[in-house]
Image (cartoon, rainbow, N blue to C red):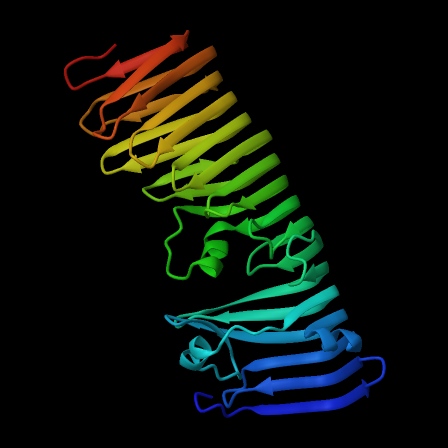
Length: 365
């Protein structure tokens, strides 16, 4: 394969040079190890007149019953069965040809991503993209995607401008039992996921990448999980976020986040060394904000109502604290830290605690 050795096979080919219609049945491009590209049916509907203007204009591109093996290593990602000379690619001058497609459709396409230590498969049941062209980079395209990850399903629909100088997306995202660690592994191999568990979500989603590479994300909807595990030994049972309205911005000037909605958690258990913390029936409704300038420091604020059920804290040295119920009809917490880490915190509101128990090696209350 490194020498460009591969096997190309086609069961049948239909070509109409006058209309530009090409239909290929049973296409395969495979490496000696059997990995590569296989396509059950490929349809190309080429606008022949556009070739005069150095444009590869496809009126239709449809791929059915296909499989593709991708090899990922320290040099990036490449399709198996296709030899790629990166040095020659860098030396090539920019092409004056442009490409575009009016209707792109993928049906039943399996993509397997091969890392040095494992392989993960993604099944694209359906992908439709309409109106995307290099000669009109600001054109808005419609996208519809249904895919099955190694664990969980993803549905995406909306409008996207992938070729614009400031790409963006505006649409809907649905996740069903998506494994967070597995999804992160697909995007960033070797990266340790800070959160493990399966999530389900129905979100209105907006993504934008500015010309200065600043990223902004806005999401509205509902999100839930069965069990989440956070690095460091924290388990969160049955978290649910309702009426979520979240906005995040990441850029050269810093980061900002704003989240409003309601959160409920059946139980939280955390253990660090000999210290353990547990609480149940946690409910929060309100707003959380945070801004972190690139120069350092942070400004944060939290306004809303909080309620907790039975809660306990064990410091591991015989010191234990617990209470049966906590309620704060309104709590307003705000503050900031500077670049040195010095913090200022302001708290306004009232907290009610029910049945407090405090025990130390020398005292019990």
